[in-house]
Image (cartoon, rainbow, N blue to C red):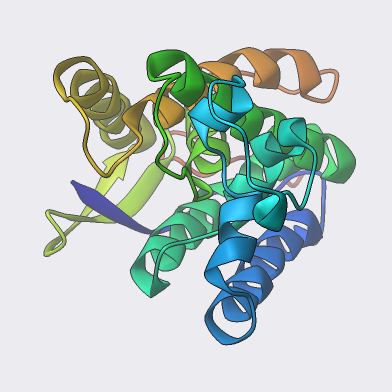
Length: 239
């Protein structure tokens, strides 16, 4: 639908978004381990499988690596291939720093993990009997994208529409359209490769949690944003 490239949205509270960078590094490291070291049984032991999570299907001792509840988190650091990883990490890179700025480093990590868990839970509720593996960071990333919309709907973001046309558009339009797309496909699609309900679960969690976890005094909906879409200097205008 669209590929985010970058936004022009200066951070106001943190000099470096090292929690976002750390999450990206962790996902990349696990992916390299998947490709070079870990076998299929290890991936299956860390993936979220609804039927085993609900107890309808016993998990084999060979792949019983972590407690079943922990797969609500571990699934989110696994990826099917390079492009699956790249897409999720690109969204995390473009939108994550400003959400981290609004929440703080530690609460941002907690926020991300809770969104990933909400995405996994929504996927289980949608198809509790599924024996297919759920992997990918899209639940957590969807929460970050939704939180960015709540915080910065007016900030303009450079995107490639349909993967080809570069446009600079307000976040409200591009993220709003993206959310509508996720919900629409979740409602109309059947058993397909993309876990749309995990995206929806992450989106809902992101909207709710950013209201709870943001730093005191952090404005919502770009209140006080400069007309050109760049956050004003917190020190105010020069005398």
